[in-house]
Image 1 (spheres, rainbow, N blue to C red):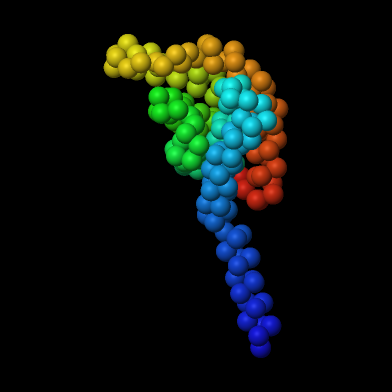
Image 2 (tube, rainbow, N blue to C red; image 1 turned 180 degrees about the vertical axis):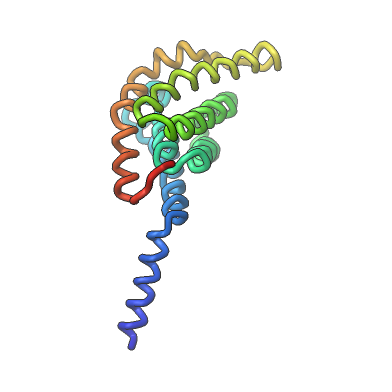
Length: 188
């Protein structure tokens, strides 16, 4: 009788884990955690400037956008930034709101583009339009609101972040495809 009860519990657990909403929630939580851990790994392995060079936090947000959509990727963006700051002090408090806005822009754009185009075209469109919108946010922050840019420049960040952009183009669509297939999801 005990075996039957254990089998029922096991079957119920499998049933719960196969639920699409549960997959989205668990995936979002795991990508958020990875969004906190991955920058630390890059900083340890490649130094203090590794974040600006390899853009590790962006990777998790972009994968979430391609795999789970806008809500998930926005949650990954926000939670990664905020908890990373609370746990590690990075990004710095001056950079935090700008980076939060930047990642949310990428999350929203990529989620929408991915509904109409393949992952590569969506990702390239997001990288271009996202940086244009982000430049607008910086311009408005400095020239309209009178805030300090804290030395942030979109052109300079693109130059420094070329290795990260290349990594994103090479790996993000592939990893998202593997996750979609493994989780039996389709981000529509």
